[in-house]
Amino acid sequence: METKGLYQVSLPLSFWNDQVHAYLGKRDGKWTIVDTGIYGVDTRKRWESVFAQYGIDPTKDIERILVTHHHADHFGFAGEMQEWTGVEVLLPEAEQELAERTWTKEGFRRFYQTTGLPDAMIDELQDNATAMNQQILPVPSRVRVLQEGDSFFLGELLFEAINMPGHTSGHICFYNREEQILISGDHFTREVVPYISYHGYGDTNPLATYLATLRQMKSMEISLVLPGHGPAFADAPERLNELISHFESRLGFVCQQVTKEMTAYEVSRTLATKELATFQQWILLGETNAYLRYLVESGELCVVTESGVCKYSRI
Image (cartoon, rainbow, N blue to C red; front, side, top):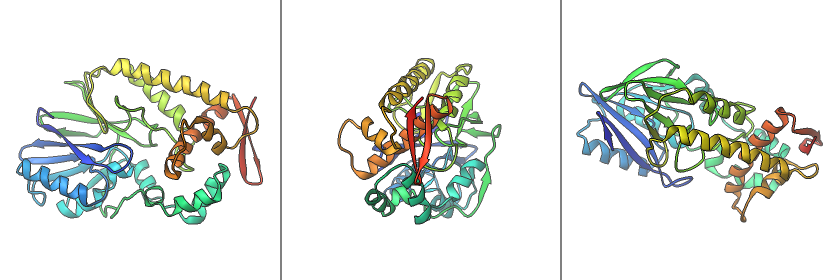
């Protein structure tokens, strides 16, 4: 896909989806990269192929690396890309803090024990590299703060960095006002519902933040969305309404599952439509935490802590 010198690059991904989209923009013989993919040999091979396809010498022709957020499938290869190209990585300050956070085994265990997750599952997750360190290797040595309002040419078009939190605390999207194009990262997608979760760090009520951001987006004129996953799409207003409706409906459903005092893990088990592997249960638990925290803040649930475990009940 190419739009006025802006190219979509699809990179392999071994979990979540089959691939993640990065973007390349060329201006005056120099290229800007938006997101880098996950750390690994397959990602490097794909970038080597793309650079060869467009005649790019990565040691000379890359001008900067922009990253929408700290998650491994977008930021994980940034350190190796920096070593390869010698350029700065730009990442929002809140995302830098999250990227630098590392779980200790004690901290990891302490938080998930509060959710009621069984110790055997915590042990298994601690040995899972994706859960523990999110495959961000090496961490870039030179990172500059990407701020809301910063502008960059991507191809022929000038894009402005816009803070759109919810999926992560400092998630940045890039918007071109002239053509009304939004590079949306994981914030706004068509193929899947964006993952809103709480895993013990960052925004303590991410779903409230995300819904507020979606409602603010209704005032934007968007003709084309270039997401981090799935197809590009042109029906932004309809998709905004779909997502808001989905999350509001899901909140009501999750609230109904709390039929007695229950841990977050117990609630998450009621949401699973089939038996899940431990890593997938961890993913669902993060989503469940986000719903429960929203419902507590909105006064629909209450939470008490007993012997270090949080238990939720209806008011």
